Image 1 (cartoon, rainbow, N blue to C red):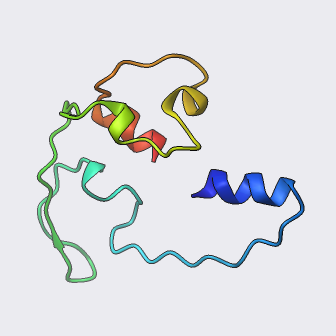
Image 2: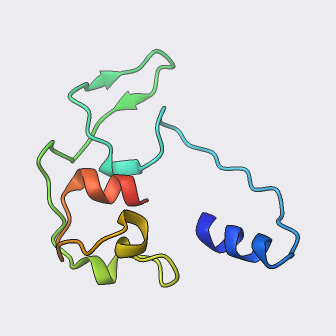
Length: 91
């Protein structure tokens, strides 16, 4: 979505203010790996179904944004099934 707003802004369109609420300290949802479990300092449960060396089970073409491909993000061709770190970086 950010890439779409940047493209529109470069064409002179006004961009609305966007506010994002995230429960975790970092964006990325389930693609954030953490060895920590239990309760955080805010009293929120820490859990993850993710593991450090996770790879996607779907091809990147079904995960990428239509106007912002993995190749555009990384500047080169990438594998069809990216690892967790690459997907987190992309999103």
